[in-house]
Image 1 (cartoon, rainbow, N blue to C red):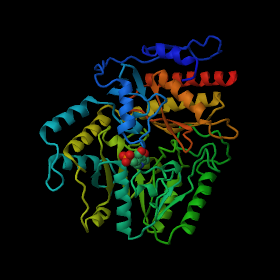
Image 2: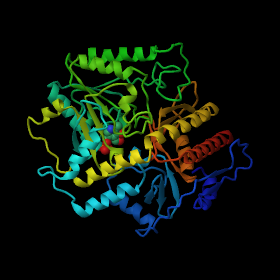
Image 3: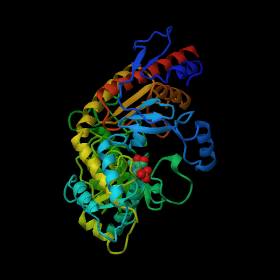
Image 4: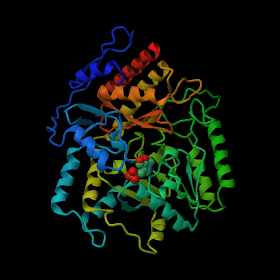
Length: 502
Ligand SMILES: Cc1ncc(COP(=O)(O)O)c(C=O)c1O
């Protein structure tokens, strides 16, 4: 929170239904009131340790590698749909969904009841026996995928799913090398760290044998990009002279991909792993048709194509249920986690019968994958997505939000890019549109803290943490989006005021 405004807001923010800003001298074009949409849900009274004691325990007994967001970490104790409540009863609009994980809504009643019923019935058997829910769920989940992607292996996390996908690609092809994009995040396990290509996650230990990171076809920050490369309602501010069906940026990036194939890997490879839209790296979208051509090149080398749908799956992109469908490609292996369980720890690898069979030549086992409670939760999540019309909601609310944010990009020099699809949105902050240098973190932090103090939680991403990530529970409403954009607008105006006063 910026110096002088802190006490002013802290005193008032408990009301949060109506946050007054008290910036009379600042000529603002936005209303001075950002009114939080109402919510009928009443949270329980917080009854655990005092905040300071929690902080002490955190410092003493929780691994320091687990960092917390914000100068004063939030202590949240209850959630309901798109809302989170802190220990003092403050309500927040959750635009980050526990890192793109709450898909259908915090404690969605249907999912909660399904989990409760299963908890009273059977918790665990492991896979040496059959229980009904794993078959029921396997049938339901695979019915949402095109042929021949009909066989599932259930895991406990996204990292485990990607580990297994890499393993399967290697076993099936009997090749070793896997290509990934720079900037991609595929997990923190020793195997997936080889294809997680973001410096801050690299620990300087040998875990990337056989993994080669190729140039990211980033049409905003990369060397090529134009005015209609992306599958998004909002394009970059870059200009180009490409006409329908032609994309020179895509062609240039494909040349780079070929270069990697020709210089970094043997003639035969095991596969290529990519997210349909990069998540952790700040919602980076590739030029249209890039993945289609890249998949073909990979297959010419004997490799399998792995789509990491951990963030993009389950309807979040709005137009399609799976991110790969937005690129008109058919992967050989699809990995899932996060939204699959609405916060319940689970993941999945879906592939063809033939590829799955390669793993059956020897034993491969995990104790909890396909756990009865996880399967019931997963099935209830799929029902909720369908019954609540969440894919359509992602498209409608996401498109609305993207277009509103694009107006802010046009107004503020420090917003370099607004991008995304459905409710997977990135706002890249820069010092100015000409240079595209990342806005310094101290400045981004203040805008971000301001949003939080006005009741809106936003994620961060990108190599320099320069991109705001908006990936809320898929149940947020247009009214919530309006509120969020207004809050963000106010935080930007405050930033400009601070900068002008310096
Ligand atoms: C695209 C993607 N893949 C894989 C993972 C790893 O998932 P998990 O944290 O469940 O291991 C993540 C986590 O952020 C992710 O964003």
